[in-house]
Length: 392
Image (cartoon, rainbow, N blue to C red; front, side, top):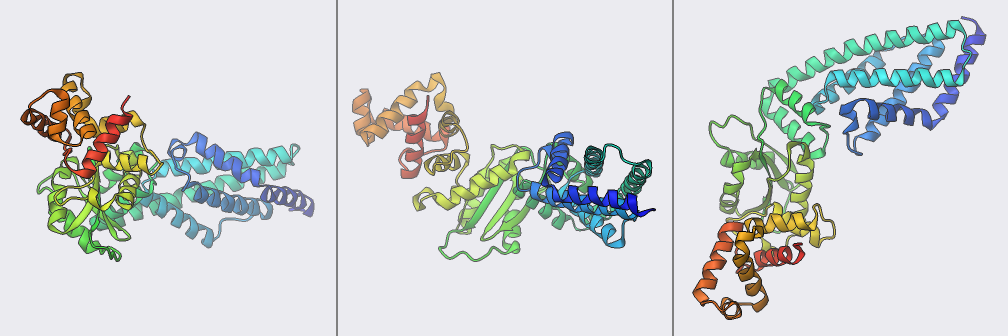
């Protein structure tokens, strides 16, 4: 190779490496053209940009020098593949992302050297084909090895899966299904995401054994779906079948723990469910916690509303809290609730509605039965008051 083509390639390389728009164009194309990457949240995009920048620099260097991928490059590719396999990102999607990136790289070179010499164009084609072939082989091998490692330690694999769900690393339900299938498990759907902590004021980091013990207490023997547990600081985080929410209060109460159980989010929104539950535990007043009862979706949304960060529209919050009371056929119960909250006592509310006090108390019991909220409890009365106030 003569010095002139080397100089021409080097000029293009320097110009592209120095231009941040090239990496931005690669990331944008991958984000737009590969569905799995299109659903990645903002926390994952810096990693994609870092890999794109590294790949751009290495491929341009190989083009300039007529070189080949080195053992250090191969080790890095294997590490990236292992991380993507653990994330649950399908290998086909990852390889497609690299092909899209190679296309953008070619277009960017062509834009800077429209009359590229034939030798330079051939060198670019040969380098990209060779690199993509090596990349495909190494990544496929690394994926298979990671799958075997995860399958060999099922508990750890499930914990890693839950960690990734909480972090929002799964880009789609399809990717989650693929990963579950590789592990040979079926995740609970509907599910309950329970975030729990000891009620004591001093809360050291949660031990995984404690979270696992809570999981065992709540798991249903013989259930076909899997449950899993992990820890976040001083809290245990459990992914359980939706029906487990009904028993969570009693199990936590026996341990002098408190918690928040979210049951209304889909599997691709476990990260949202975790944020709701964690924020609820951070902001709930002490009197919101009662032995034998955990905070729910409705409590979490009311707390988010009070904190100025509503995760749902006011009418949705009202429906979560009031439940069947929003039906026209339950108008008499809504009237009883409104009168009780405004008057301050059952006797006073009965006089307002021209009812016998026992009739009013019966309606309050019906409200409790239908909403799982006791109007006589200060916190639950507050949530009911907020819900009936913001209700359209």
